[in-house]
Length: 178
Image (cartoon, rainbow, N blue to C red; front, side, top):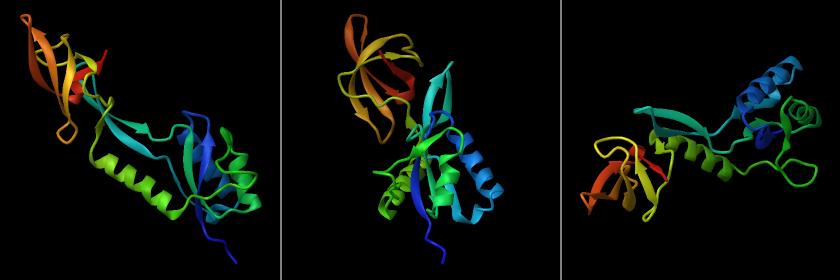
């Protein structure tokens, strides 16, 4: 008799994703509907940045304002989610929420797994972009990105030193956009 659990995208107030996820679990349990709900995920990625001269690793949400909920869709379950504080609704067309396909779920979970393994820089820079160096021996120098090596997380930046253009190799986190 029990329906199959599927993944749905729930729209929340941005910045309240964790609170909504916790509240949703508590409400489902309190209303005796815990078995209709599976996992609740907030897809995040690991981001490296330089703050105050120190390398910091932080978590950034892939989809701010959205959470993934695995659930059996029914009218009572729909009401549990819809009436959770800070939830604005389901993502889908018409009145009925549209579940994600298994391929979409796999793609999102794969993206999360690979982001955990390889933290990425806060900024994605491109050739020709002006940058300011914020760390290392060339601190406070400005230059232009000449080359980007995403595999090694390094850049070649052309910096003017003593009136001459000089290439300097830096890590992504040692520069910021101008």
